[in-house]
Image (cartoon, rainbow, N blue to C red; front, side, top):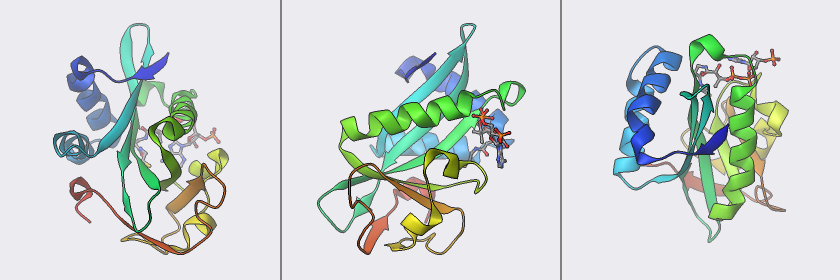
Length: 161
Ligand SMILES: CC(C)(COP(=O)(O)OP(=O)(O)OC[C@H]1O[C@@H](n2cnc3c(N)ncnc32)[C@H](O)[C@@H]1OP(=O)(O)O)[C@@H](O)C(=O)NCCC(=O)NCCS
């Protein structure tokens, strides 16, 4: 089951994020995004009453009036990876993002994973950001023309860019 994260989920989210990445850095980014008010929304996946996955969508600052969001960090508990949980989280997040006003999503992630959801490096090519030009920097428009013109985005401080 996928649902929006609640405050009470935070300790369990931290455990899943740390276990997935094998270090604490990304869990700290998640906490900092919340503390700074830069989290847009968070989804969690539950299985058999346990929290097994998490994805963060945070806000970005673009040089235009429309709102853009960044996907990540995303984490699935290691023992249940490769069973579709991550895909479920991404798809649910992409459905929810327009409800929060986002017209486009940026991700810095595995090049073998995110294209299956429609993300491309080509769409991100005109986005000036600390990650511009990296193959892992990919974008997906949720509204027509979201990435049609050159733009500049700034990331929340939590990402340390
Ligand atoms: C990446 C991650 C969130 C995917 O979640 P998941 O539930 O395992 O993903 P799904 O079951 O929906 O999809 C599995 C696919 O993801 C791919 N995948 C998983 N980890 C990957 C990686 N490190 N690099 C590339 N592809 C990866 C698998 O190859 C698999 O592809 P296939 O369906 O062609 O076999 C999860 O593996 C994870 O938490 N990894 C560690 C943390 C991390 O890297 N987070 C993402 C940062 S962008």
